[in-house]
Length: 157
Image (cartoon, rainbow, N blue to C red; front, side, top):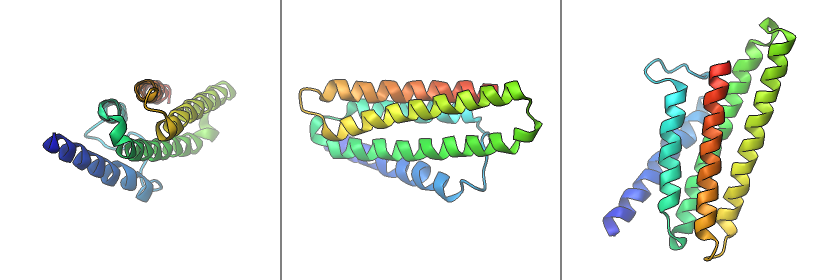
């Protein structure tokens, strides 16, 4: 049990350091899909599986750790949305009106789904013992849906 807790704590720390700070530090210097070794789609899938599984495994006694992990995931999501939006606007003048309309709709959908993940994050912070299982599932499911929306958006752009 102790080894598992140490392993989970290490994962959270690593996640925050690698994915929480790096995107914020280099948001202006990088763009979506710039990593030639790993496509953004695969990065998002990998991160989502890790976050979803980690959140699902937390008990009510580990709520603070779950909340920290979820908050770090939201920071990463925000950075990704911002980078995608910046990349889109770099191409804006080259797009026709229908492409612009589709891009606006896609970005609006991503932000809406991000807000849903944030609502579940709020529920993680304040849920009762009885609701804990449902709240964890809700957060994980909404996070996974957002991942799918990112994958779709990347294909469109």
